[in-house]
Amino acid sequence: MEQYKQLTNTSLNTIVSKYLRDKILLGELKGGERIVESDIADLLGISRAPVRESIQELASQGLIKSIPRKGNFVVKFTMSDVAEIFDIRLLMENSVIEILINEDKLTNYDISS
Image 1 (cartoon, rainbow, N blue to C red):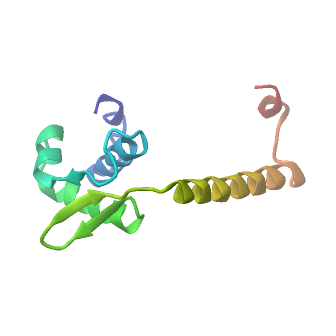
Image 2: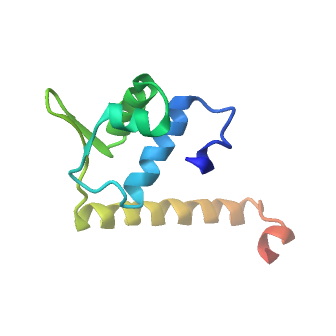
Image 3: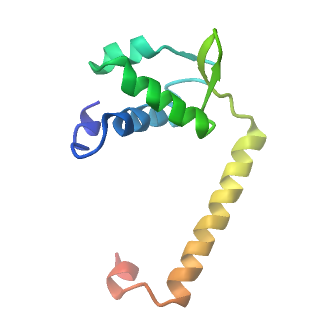
């Protein structure tokens, strides 16, 4: 949580979302694992409201699945999902590089760093 305290001008919801997203993407929260609002709130020393909002945000991003009357669970990614994500990322990064080069946005500092 220490690394998230530097985000002082950021809403608590955004901090919790980043915290949970990092835990999911680093595999510290596994696919299929239940996320309990009160446990996260207690762990972070905050109320449940920002945790609830963060879970809703991550559910809209496809990282968490909310099942009514059951709870919130980390989505299990298949190898096909991961491959698709990497393909999309590769296309986006290539597009950004093309724009930077074609519009002469890179400086000598960018190239030498």
